[in-house]
Amino acid sequence: MFKEIYKDDTTLKTLLDGKWIESSTGNLIEIVSPLDNKVVGKVQAMSKEEVDDSIKNARKAQKLWRNVPLNKRARILYRAADLIEERVDDFVEIMLREVGKDRKSSESEALRTADYIRFTADAAKAMEGESIPSDTFPGFKRNKVSIVTREPLGVVLAISPFNYPVNLSASKIAPALIAGNSVILKPATQGSISALYLARIFQEAGLPAGVLNTVTGRGSEIGDYCVTHKLIDFINFTGSTEIGKRISSISSMKPLLMELGGKDAAIVLPSADLNVAAKNIVSGAYSYSGQRCTAVKRILVEDSIADTLIEKIKAGIEKLKVGNPLDGDVDVVPLIDSKSADFVEELMKEAEEKGATKVIGGSREGNLIYPTLYDNVSLDMRLAWEEPFGPVLPVIRVKDKDEAIEIANKSEYGLQASVFTQNINDAFYIADKLEVGTVQVNNKPERGPDHFPFLGVKSSGIGTQGIKYSIEAMSRPKAIVLNIIE
Ligand code: NAP
Ligand code: G3P
Image 1 (tube, protein in one colour):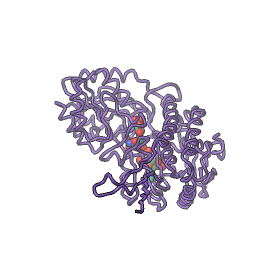
Image 2: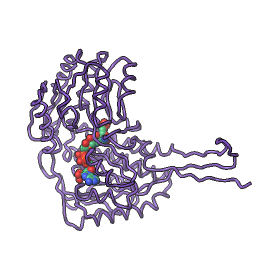
Image 3: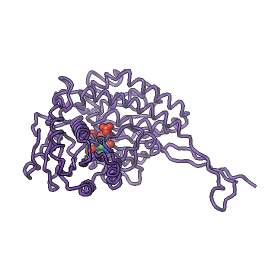
Image 4: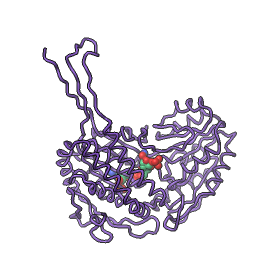
């Protein structure tokens, strides 16, 4: 299945107009594994001219695709989901080597993606449009009816991050396709091989040529050209707040769906079940080494229970398996690159210099940073505010729930937050005041299940994801008003 996408053992081609091609630039980008520094593969570094061809081709293909009956589009998505499940081992191996994701997380990402794609087809079939009579509005007789259906937007540019190379590509592609759009997929360079495997799956599932094209190359080289291209009708971006802000500043008037960075807080009240809180905080903060936008990235806890909670979290961290997923089943893996590990180390060093108490961790071996917990983190420390995207967690002690809310809302980010309490009134009191897209009560922050609305406010995003919401974001109402001639 995947040999078509390879020119030779290590060189991958890119998908344009149903054909896997090499870039005329002859330039290749080596993808090196964060686990053993071995070359995983080489991807095409496409030129702006080739990006242009790809977008023009997708626009042409979209003209036909929009007229393909939804049941036929759905059949292709169902087929794609089946194929992913059939080839789950291939996805596990490539994600393991390319983005250093442990086997268990890689498998759940692939299977989650198959479920996502199927659910997207089901959801679209249930979005039936509406007809609105005129006489419900004052002064109107019953001589008009507005028949409202949904229209595709055209060509969607889908830009995905490294940390979910398959799932966060498919969560853009599937809703866009089912709505009748064509898609240009620009995957993260470190993750592009896994994303090319996904593109091959959609092709094998019967997607017509040009409806999904892939653009490989560094975002720093072709990114601006893609997002400002006049033939792009919608940008669906997941990535850092820094790049997100850049895109929204240069992509004038293009409609955007943006899922950006986070600094998700876990607020723990004295009325919480501290075992539940500690368990959720440990898996929420350290799975995939904290390289999740929804990772728990700060704890806001009342002084009276802080010591007990920290003991329970420390005990949970001590049970985590740390190491190289090539060697076996581990929870905490090496970070995606040394630049990311340097950044995490920088935040830890500054916190320690300013008096934070290291409860556990702090050591580093190459890109591997051991799960680390700091107590007595104060608001003048960068670790209190910046997104480490690594396995380090600050504890900020507060006097009460109102101070927790205040500090939580002071962050530039607003993705999710968790409130741990068994007092439902406190839960709603706090949830009501938090400036975030989602408040989890007695659970860690997380995007799934994928039919729930998923959104970030402030610097964490624009618009709402989640299957039905993504379909709506990448389509628009079209009204045909019948006027009865009297
Ligand atoms: P990133 O550095 O922002 O890259 C994201 C994507 O943008 C990559 O495909 C990248 O390509 C591309 N890109 C870079 N410069 C561009 C430009 N000028 N124009 C267009 N595209 C450009 O993020 P990442 O390191 O892959 O992912 C980690 C970040 O994403 C974290 O901040 C995390 O919080 C956030 N994230 C958020 C969510 C969410 O749902 N809210 C989910 C996952 C991750 P290259 O790889 O070629 O540079
Ligand atoms: O960072 C990826 C983001 O979308 C989180 O997904 O399912 O790990 O909460 P999840």
